Image (cartoon, rainbow, N blue to C red; front, side, top):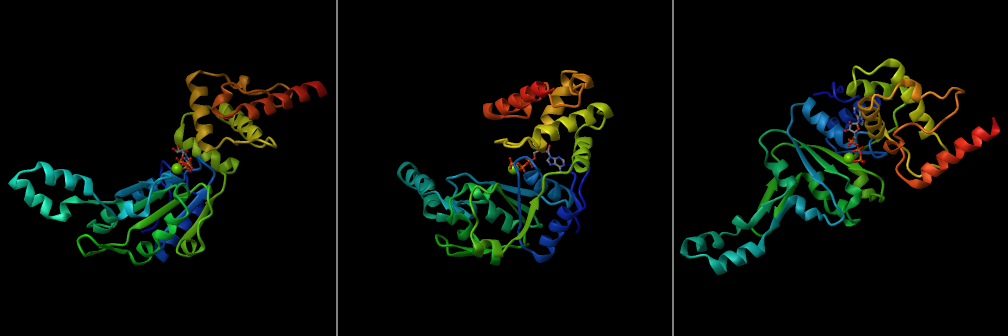
Length: 284
Ligand SMILES: Nc1ncnc2c1ncn2[C@@H]1O[C@H](COP(=O)(O)OP(=O)(O)OP(=O)(O)O)[C@@H](O)[C@H]1O
Ligand SMILES: [Mg+2]
């Protein structure tokens, strides 16, 4: 069981190594990296490549660890007890009918090994990762309401992504294998674009990549455009039939690229960019 990238997803050698290392260690793979560098997609692609179903748990600021295990629906039970007749009373008596299984439980009880994605773990409060330590370590948890111990039939392949909005606790980090997805170098980026736009004209791609890296390397940008933004931009360039010449400035200096709204996402960055171009024109 080795992951070697896929025809949808370009995985660098160190990323493949990390995926396989976490599988060997049987520890979750903690993936960090700039937004849009393929963290979420990695889990989808590995699951597809290894033929495993993928269970996804998208974390919000209000998500609690317990919700991944199970929730006891006391409100429904109370309502049923007040409204139902004799046949309903049977249902109400059995508390199991009101236990709602969470994603972890579903992963634990699956008959085949599954992949489990805990996406954007840094969105939750600081207690969240600590509350999952035992479950991740031992792959089991206890349901107090029904006095059941739920143990994983197969250890799931766990992916955890983070955008670094919060530090993760040391005890949690100890249990993971860590990988940082570096921003793709131009050659890797070219390979990623090829996957998405196989028929793109060479000159257009070269000019677009140059403009993209020029914009990205502007000092002082608040939000640097990432892979997914480059892909959006290319899609627009193709859809609007923008000629390659519109991307190349005659004198090798940066100019405002067409449809720049796909790359720069706030007015400060736009102003910064415009100022730089004005300064360059001035200095000519
Ligand atoms: N290595 C890659 N190969 C192919 N496509 C990629 C790659 N990296 C990123 N992409 C493209 O970028 C898009 C965004 O990727 P994804 O949603 O996985 O990013 P993310 O890192 O999870 O971002 P966020 O932190 O904002 O959630 C994908 O849908 C895909 O089209
Ligand atoms: Mg994501």
